[in-house]
Length: 370
Ligand code: SAH
Ligand code: MG
Image (cartoon, rainbow, N blue to C red; front, side):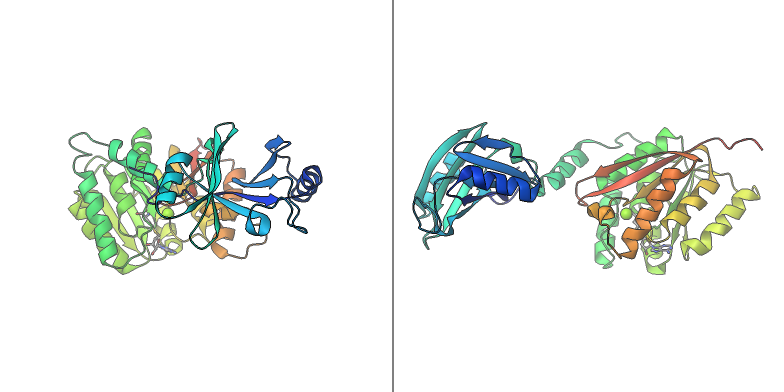
């Protein structure tokens, strides 16, 4: 299976032609604040956020002397094999413009002119392989096909149940923001690691995450998952999905705003009407994430685990000037988690079928005496 349906793997390199390489090198290094990763008398290359800006000497745009390409600019598309791709392009009527050249370090370049006169560069550069955005999703499929609970009993048929749940979510026109299958494997494993018998989820949607986690639980009444969902239609779809997935006995979906429902859940725990939770999965609206964390800690036993989804949000948590309430909510959560003395924390960023995101983990410490 190829990582991308196209033979071009995305733009890798843009080259500019310059009359004085060392002057241009100094100008770009100073202006961009980076040192070249490739620095030779015949070529200077900068790594700009995973893309390359290259400087090619001996062309003077003002006179056109030594100029090979229109405008002095060539964009190079990443390919797996420069020679094979060049042959294919020529077969399609492109005209050879720049012979395939091995420039060292496993980097090969070539260029053609398209039938309309445009210069089209191609480049094979092992240092720029990882930026094809199709690869993480492809790897997710690879991992999902191989890993996850497979044993009879609690895990049997879980793939089919999740696929049916995802189909029901699509059919109902609900947002397709359930956790991915690899994340489902991860949550399932975490639930088993903490020996979970009671799990709380904030944000049910169609019950995909609930399914993965509930499959880690013993049957009712010992195993219990309480999931909070504001949208009654989501709750109805989730209940059907969970019943079909064989865990209807141990899952209770409560409908309402999580901030309205959580005090009731906390009161049940305080009154001893229900044991504290072994695991909490926070995955609802992002603005009150910090409040969800505080309440989650209150209802979780020492040694229990809290997992929060979407704490990276495509890297937007770094946007200094953002006014996006979700980003601000996640950032407030991250800060609250970072300084909360009641837990040991960790966070990982993830890529895959759901793009670039991350999960935060919090292990609840024994309460201080007194
Ligand atoms: N955990 C689910 C995905 C949850 S998506 C899974 O991975 O399978 C987020 C869900 O939270 C949506 O269904 C949305 O309706 C619900 N939600 C949003 N705001 C909420 C709130 N304030 N209280 C309870 N649920 C909320
Ligand atoms: Mg989520």
